[in-house]
Every structure is written in structure tokens, then in C-alpha cells.
Length: 491
Figure: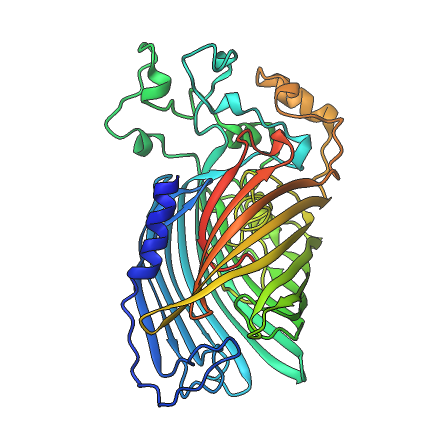
């Protein structure tokens, strides 16, 4: 792990191929940190190297092009264009183009995003958090009984997976009502293509043959032989036929924001809060079959509050310690949502690749991705941000920081389950309900984690984030900790 981490730091520091279309005048003006301001066009082509415990190692290319003009607003930019193409070892793809500007439309902020995220093994752990049992033996194979005495419980390494491709196209705009109070509006479409895991693709040249003693290691059994949790939920009627294969969901969004942050990326002080409504439609048939998906029109409510508190400045006036926290909630207030949309966190502006919740490196770090699937939930993240050192390489300004953190997620709006009917359905398929559900568990128990992050930033806007996180309860992850390497701060 140390070797991988060292390679990532070297890649960030040495790989940028920067360009300044406009030379800076001398004597150079400096920003609040004492760094010379950036002007004109700045860009770098970087390897898209990352690691996520849920998605695996990532490889590809990315570029972030910034235009600062004469630099008067630095570290704010006039235009930002972000392009990325990458793929991971767990068969997850990222193909994305994003544009962000506060100046293209005078006095308005505009964000445009087009993203395609194919995922051959999307996580699915059932409904209502702790009411759905997680048994790591179902998806983990080990021939050594000393290491796994219950190895006979093994089903498939994709037992908690299904195939899900997400297509996202979005446009969002923000205008000023009065000073720091803003109005927001957005329009877009989310396209979900859902199916069983493509076992043949994952097996490659290995053919499934149950007569082989080690077939569980060599090749996956098809869902007809070894169904996963997604297939079982379909058989039990928890996932209905009209949502089982995905659908297309155009949406409109409107809300308010209040923003006093000193900067967007890694702010040192200020408040950001938003409140908005999203109406999601379902205008077409399900991706496979003729089941109508129009019954999934819905209205969702979101609220988020972020606060950045300056704690300590050094003698040069550089902010060395910042206390940052956020909490938020998302709930369905009208209509129905398909199961695959309940793991999508709505946002007023598309700034990251992933908006997945709750659980994983983009919401509650350390938990299994999508561990909390419900109609509504709340979440909180608390962290201290220590800026350890600032330095320059060439004309680029770098910093290194440490971030201890605590994350929490809790269901506020669970699925309503008829336990008597569900037990009859499960037993009719030859299964035992106690293997998959704990009906006596409270759905409102918080899911918690804690960890430590390392940040390496360039020019205040480009930040490499390495987070190590540990779940408090093993029902949220059988591993003692998860590790993530991503771009930017979580919030």
C-alpha cells in the first residue's frame, strides 16, 4: 500500500503538463496564501489513477482546463472544463465532460454535465439498512476451513451485485436574489439500464463447470444456477417487474442556496446551505419488456447544511486548521421511486463523478457502497482539516494536508415490509427469511464510521484525496477498513 501511495503522490506532482497562455506580470501579485496568482489558461493532462474499495483500481486519463483571465478573482476561475475517461479493475467505467462558470452568463453560475457510468457489478445489499442482513460468506470464497469455517455458505462473488449502467445529462443555473442568497434551477435526465450481472463476460475464457472441485474460484455460476440478492428480490416481489430493468427519468429541479464560503474548493470559512425540490418523471417503458415505468413519477426533498470554521492561522496569515462539517437529508414526499434511484443523492450542481448514497467513498466512508437503500435518509460528515505544508514545483502551487473525520448515515423513511407475506414468499422459493432479514432490528439505528484523509492540492482547485475509513459495525462492512483515492474534498 505504501508503494501505491508513493506512486500516486509522484504522479500528481510530476505528471502535470501545464500551460499559461498569458505570462504573469512582474512584480507578481499574490493571493491570500502568499502564492503568485494564476492568470490566463492553465491545464494539465494527468493519468486518472485512483482507488476505491468498492470499485477497485482505476486507470485512464483526465484533464482540467482553467481560465483565470487577469487573475483578479483567483483562486476562483472564469471557466473550468473537466474531461475524464477511465475504467476500474472491478469493471466500472467513467466517461465524463463537465463545464462550470460564473461568467459565461453574467451574474449567473452555469454547470453542464454529461456522464456515462457503466457498472458491471453494482452493489446491492437489500432494503432498510440493518433490517437486511449482510453475510460476507455469501460472496467470499476460501478453501481453507481454518480461515472460513462456513465456506459452504458461499453463493457467488457477485451475490451482492447487479448490472447497472447510468447515463446522466444535466444543466444547472444559479442567480442572485440578494447578496449571498441565490436561486437555483436545473433540468436533466437520468437513464438507468439494469440487468443481471453478465457472468459470461466476467468469466472470460473460464467456463462454468460444477464438476470441477474449485469452480467457485475459476468461474461464476449463472444467475439461473446461483441467483444473487437482486434476483431473489425480484422473485420475492420486493423489486417489481416495472423497475427491475431500469428506465429513463427526466427531471426538473428548483431551490435556494445561501453561500458565504471564501472559495468553492476547500473553503476555510463560511456557510453553504441549500434547500430544493426535484420532480422525477418516468416517460418511457422499462428497458427490457413491456412493463410500464410511468408509475414512478415522484417528488423528492433535499436539504444540506455545510459550515467551515477557521481554527488557527500561522504568523504568515495562512489558515492551518479548519473545522468542517455538513449534514443533510433526502426524502420522497410524493409518488414512488424505483429501487435503483434510492441510491442517488440529488445535488444542485454536478461537481463530482459520483453522487451515490448512502455508504461508500462519496457519502459515508468505510461503509459498503449503497448499504442504506431506503426512500429517505439523513447523513453527516465531520472533519478537521490540517494544512501541513505549502510548496511550489515550477510555477505550480502545492499543499499537503491531513483530515481526521467521522461519518454517519441513518434511514428516516424506510420501505414498508409485510413480514408475514414476505416470509411466505421466501419460503415458497425454498429459502429461509432469517438468512436475509432481521425484522427485529431497528431501521433507525445510525450507521457510523471514522477515518483519516490525506490531501495533496495543486493551485487550490486540483486536490488529490486519499481517505482511510473504518466502519463501527461489521454489518456495514466485513473488512476492518476501506481505502479511497479520489479527486477533491467530499464536501
